[in-house]
Every structure is written in structure tokens, then in C-alpha cells.
Length: 330
Image (cartoon, rainbow, N blue to C red; front, side, top):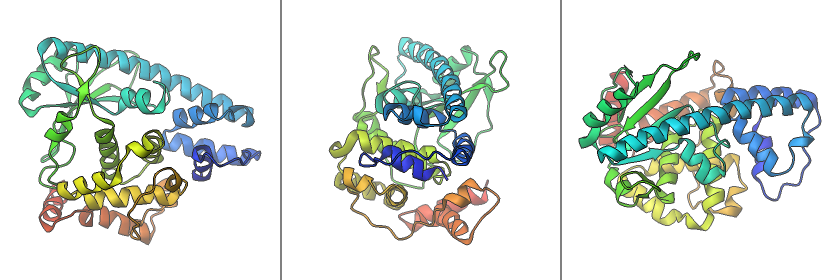
């Protein structure tokens, strides 16, 4: 599995040479492609000066995958700034979420983390106007809206591509009535994104909060969510105050979600404790790499993990009941 390789690439104390067995790299290639993390692995290997230590077939494939993702990211970045410029002209406040901005700010390069869509946070009062303006840019294919959800999606067909470009307009980060999260706190601490006046970016603190919630929302079903969190912990280090973070999560009723998600990441990447110790030691992890990688090979532990995620990762019975309602209505 690819986790030991990622552990070695991220652990600053790891001086172990990379494996030389071709079979290892054949499997690594399959795992990397499965999780869509070729850009991250390529950039980590290059940063550590170890790219040339990998077999030629693996290195060639990784460089090609990285180049394809880079060109797509550059295209998405141009599309995003076109949208942001339009919203700026119309006086619509927007915060870009994740995507190319996250790659540039926390991974160090626009191509260091692949993305495939554009996520924007807007005020609910601006939703109708924002939808009308993105439609004017060709995003006319609306995906079916999910009750109690917190974003809507529109897509634009691309020439010579079977996959359209999708933009998600968010007004919150979690399903309705499943937490006490106050999205206004994210807006209040957001800073202007140059050269715009109405376009902002999340603070580092709220970016990490978003990344943790995003990883939880997908039940950590890909190593890309691990890498996002690990990368931010490496970058922020002491700037990340877990005591404040956990106190706020308790207030927002997201504490169980946050602590179990971070605890799983720390469990599989224990070197993080040396960088920034996480004060909560959770024993209810239930996450298994094999069950995620082999999608049809579900274990008892993975079923327990799914049950915890769907029903017991909530801080109050009220939020659990609303999560059950959402589960039934799918």
C-alpha cells in the first residue's frame, strides 16, 4: 500500500532510501491513480530530491500525470478568476474554497494538488444573483438539488472533453440542522484576496477547519483528504492552536467529527505528533486502508466505521436525528 511511502515522504526524520523493487512501484502506481494523488506524490518526491530514485516507468508516468493535472489546474484557475472578476464587478462577496488557491497557499505551487472543479462560498442572499451570472458564463447544466444540502452545482460543457467543468456555490459547510456551525465566523475572519475588494480568502485557521470537515464529510475515503490535512499541519505548525480549535468545535457541535477525523490521520501518520501534538487520543477509529482501497472487500470494522460516520459522529441527539432523516430521504 502507498501509506508507507507517504509516511517516508512527509516524515522529516525519515532517511530511508526508496524501495527498488519494480513490483512496489507497479502497485504504487495503481494506488496513486486510484486516489488521484499523482500531483501530490510527484511534488513531494521532487521537493525531497528523490524523484530520480524511482524507476523510469514510474517516474515517466508520474511526470505525465502531473503535467496533465497542472494544465487542467491552470485552465481552472483562469476560469475561476473570470468568475471572480465578474462577481467583483457586481459587488457579490465570494470566498474561493480549496482548489487552486489551496494548492498555491499551502502546497507551494498551483500544480502541486490536482483539482477538477470550482467551489465558492457566497452569502445566501446573493445566491439567486450568483446563479444568474454564472449561467451567463455558460454554466447552464444544473445538477439535481439535494434537500437540506448546503451547495448547488452547475456545469459547463468543454470543447473536446467528455467531462464538463463544474462550479459549486456553497452557502454553508454542513447539512442543515446537523451542527451549530456559524458560517458568519468564517466570513468575519476572511481577508481580502488581492487584487479584489469583494473577493476574500479564508483565514488559515478556518481553512484547516474546512479541510477537516471536508475530510470527515467524505468519510476519509481517499488519501487526498489525509494529504490535505497533513500538508496544512506541516505548514501551520504552532500557528495551529488545537485548544482554541477544539473549544470552538465543541461550541459548534462538530467536536466528534473533528476529533475522530484528525485522530485517524495522526494514527496513520504518527510523525505529526512531533510537529504538532494533538491532545485527543481516540480509540474509536474504525478506518481501514484495505477496506477503502478494495471497495468491494468490506470488513466488519469498515461497516462499523460507516455506521459511526452516518449516525454517531454527532455531538447531540438532535443532530443525530436530523442526520437520520437525511439518510432516510436520500
